[in-house]
Length: 356
Image (cartoon, rainbow, N blue to C red; front, side):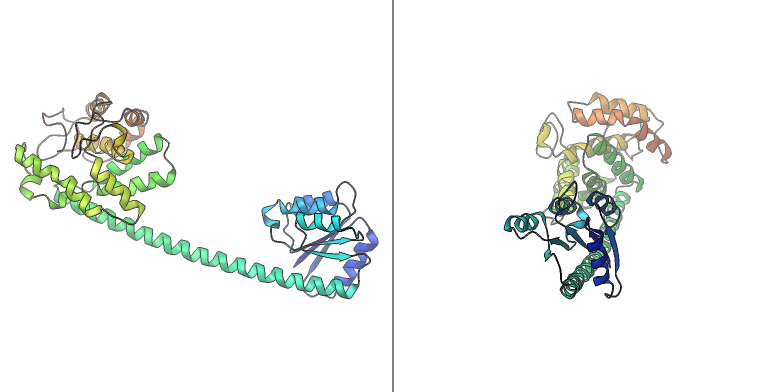
C-alpha cells in the first residue's frame, strides 16, 4: 500500500515516517510542496494521502479539493493534519472531501492506529472493486456470447428464407452491408447501425409463408398472385411482432415498412414520408438496388450503373431523398461491394423492375 504525506515541515515528515515505519507492506512518500503532490498524483494513485492544512501556495483544503476532482481519487482516504482548532477549518475540509482529522502535535500510537484502520478500509474497497470488475467481465462475456448466438440464429434463418426464395444467401449479406453504409452516412449512432445490420436479414422473413408456386414463379405474377406475394409483409410482422429485444423491434419495423414508398403509394399501409420507420426507408433502397443487380427467375440482372440511376431517379417518389443522397455519397463503397460479389449484373434492365 502506498501512502503520500504532504507537509511543509521536514521535522513533521520525519516524525510521520518514523511512526508509520512499523506498519508492514507499505511505502511512504513525503513531499514538502502541495504542487509537487498534485503533479505526482497525476501519474500515481496512492492508497492513502495525508495533508497539512497550512502550506505555501495552497492550503490542505485546496489540495484535497483538487485531488477529489480526479476520478482515481474519488474514494482514496485523505487525512488532514492540522493545529487549527477552528470549526470552520474542519467543516471546509469535510466539504472538500477529507476522510479523517489528526491534530498537531500528534500521538504516534494514535496516528499508527488510525492509518492502519484506514488502510484496511482501502484494501476492502480495492477488493470490492476487483470483484466488481471480475463480475463485469463475466457479464460482458456472457452478453457477447448471447449476442453471437442471436446473430447466428438470425443469419441462418435469413439464409434459409433466401434459399427457399430461389436465391443464394449473398443477397441478404449485401443488403445488410449496404443498409449499414447508408445508416452510417446519415449519421446514425454505431449501436443503431449495428442493429440495422443484424435486423436487415429478416426483412423478408414472411416469405416463408408464401406458396412455392407464387414465390418461385418464373414469369409475371397475376393480380391474385401479387396480392398473395404481398402477404409476406403481414406474415413477417406476425412472426416478429411483440419482440422484447430492441433488435426484434427494429426487425419488425423493417419487415413492416420496407415496401412502403416515400410518396405514399407503397404497401401494406400506404405510409408516407417520415411516417415510414427510418430503418425501413434505408433497407428499401438497399433491397431494391441489390435485387435489380441480381438475376431472378422473372428477370435478368441489371448493370450496376442502371440500378444506380434507377435509385437516384426515385428520390422523393419511392425513396427517402436523404437516404438516396447518402446512397450517392457512398456509391464508391457500394460499387466495390457489388463488384467483389459474385453474380453482379451485366444485362440491361428487364421489363419487370423490382421484386414484388
